[in-house]
Image 1 (cartoon, rainbow, N blue to C red):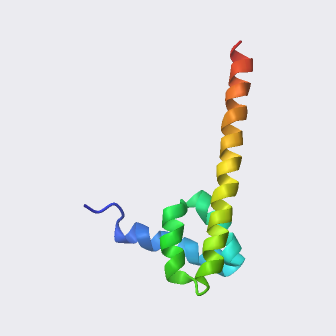
Image 2: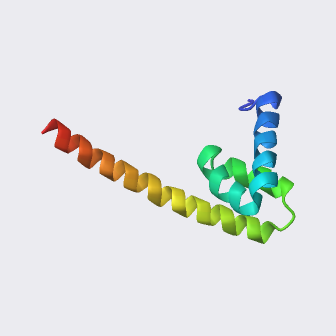
Length: 86
């Protein structure tokens, strides 16, 4: 079973490489986890980067930041919806 076609996989790798070249490990770790998802970024990052420890640190920080931000957004959205409907 194929989840990703070769063309789609290549497109994700090219996007990840552009982010890595422009913003470095921090950019790929922070932005990549939001746009591509943590498992995809980890796989692509382990192929592309040289300093694996620094990369894993930034992916971990990115995952924590986006988890907190999206959870807060969800909570406040529910509160706003309850205020509007009542």
